[in-house]
Length: 222
Image 1 (cartoon, helix red, strand yellow):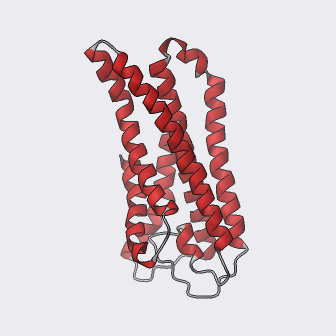
Image 2: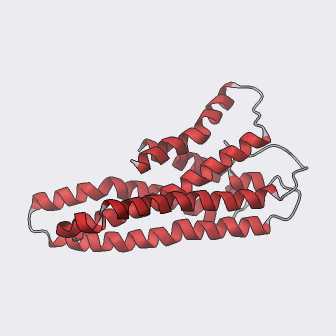
């Protein structure tokens, strides 16, 4: 349910403005609206990474420790994990926005992107943005590399547990439980790592726009 809310909100935070720009000749957005769009986008993106990790842990417990599932994944644990995921999203978005709002913007006012994506907005600043870029990179490592490593560990244990299941029906049920989650994880984390962790250059800018559009719209749809 949390993943559903995040995906709907994540797509809605930038899709409506994007659709509006497709039919309007003058594609404008106010500074406040741009900041709000960025805040929502960052919050939901980070929260989704955290929720996907929690879901992989949930599947790990369900498949590897089925008899202990209701004890390990009790209501209190689920609540703490959900609140932690949202708190990480709000915290990282807030820090990025505070650092961004300290920058002066006096140059070209055209965001080279489909929406107010943080790296594209940083390019418009008139001051040195290396602190902001380092924090975006560090945040990317924290919410992409760390969670992905934990998910790979979970799914390695899950795969080993599935291979030990004797019945064909049991293996099929276990694989179907994880397949959709693995598909989303692969798309979401793979593309996000290319956008935020690979060094930027002018030739890759157009490719990054398409990749960002892909995981902003295709993943929620999937």
